[in-house]
Length: 124
Image 1 (tube, helix red, strand yellow):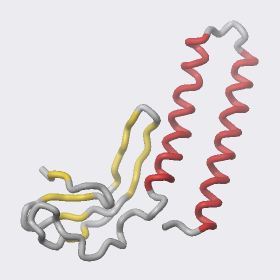
Image 2 (cartoon, one colour; image 1 turned 180 degrees about the vertical axis):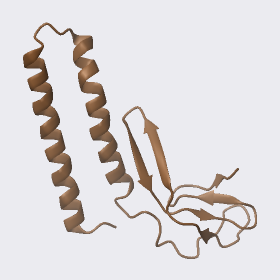
Image 3 (cartoon, rainbow, N blue to C red; image 1 turned 30 degrees about the vertical axis):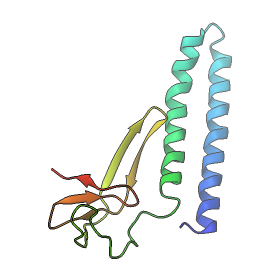
Image 4 (tube, rainbow, N blue to C red; image 1 turned 60 degrees about the vertical axis):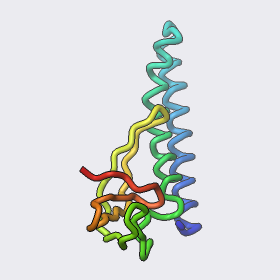
């Protein structure tokens, strides 16, 4: 779990980014009074997705990146899984895009893998 000071810094960063986005969009709209709704959406959407990507990453890692998991057992075969580091995982969804560095565990027996706390996934 992230420390209170880390959470406060993340919240402050998010709120500042939100305020900056709002100000930029209001200024853009002021300079483009002729813009139709579709043009406005075209300005808002990528900015919103970037901001939401930051929030998604914060929420996904709120309880840590999974590195502290010890004795993680493969749900398929029961073998203790091996820690393999923290590879970057790119995530895209309608709400935004983000990248996470999360612990990855691999089963040496059945070759399954998992990014805790999610369910095991097939590797291959």
